[in-house]
Image 1 (cartoon, rainbow, N blue to C red):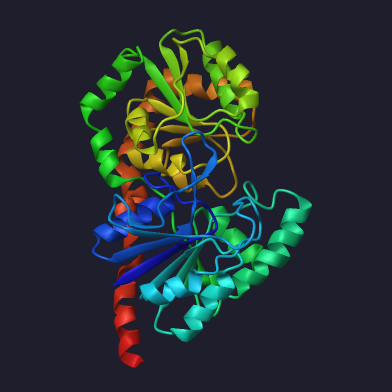
Image 2 (tube, rainbow, N blue to C red):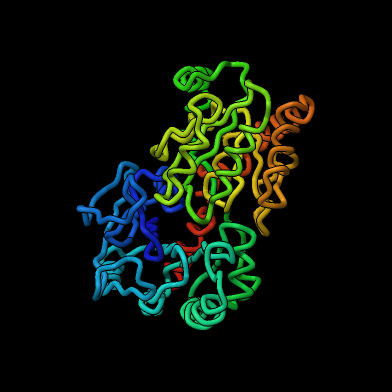
Length: 396
């Protein structure tokens, strides 16, 4: 079965830990013939947008990747982008299944034209937008999303079998903002890379990472990672909270890119011992870092790390965002209600010094993590589609 993923709503960077990387990786492993259509744009190691020099190639996971040029001004930050070669590329690939990542882009019209011409193709779409990362002001919410992108999303309704939100709140966004019928909307969670989870879980991984950063085996190590920018300044509160805890055994490691305007504050909160900032790391290297920790803390906005860490079976403290409670598997997570230093410090103390609580959190995390967030299992979303494709072919 030939499966084509259309990823034009955001950059696709080879080797990263995003859904478009891991869903395609594990669908290829399931035996599907998988391809990706995306833009020329990628994220660089410095967290900046750049362009990929390759245009049609097979990536490290065996997935054919086709990068299309955009029409007009070559700037990925433009809200309204068109890819003239999309229709021709779809015709050449001749997929059995289309998986459309995001519904807020102009070329949904092109996709509908293709699906009209090829009624045997089974199509799915997902949504990564919610009120914390999109529609954050009146104009964006009421004009860009509720009028413009709603129009383009609505074009797909008659041709898409199922619309998936990757968070519960993003399922709600599909129906409440884009007007997608509720019966067509479901949750399809993001997750963790099974191979990297297994590799990072080896006992020598914990010892190696802790030795590298001067962390003793009996230290209580907290880990956090991701961008530190205007949207995630709460990481600064976390660094201060650990410094405020008068116990030399409680330590914190921070990794990720830092916005230039926050670099000085990060440096001031780093002491090289109890609070360390180790810079940006490759996505695959985040797995052993998290595996070496006792507790992972994400006090800011949701990222794909939440599901990854839940899958790795590590207790977490995270910010209480609406529609993100799916990472709580029955006691592995504590939620922060406010961006408040005292609350953060209190929650860390509770987990670090209450042995019964910490043991319960670890037990739930280990027992349920990969049952809920395995990308190997998430990728099986298309298994029933194989029979549907065969039936459609016979009918037509």
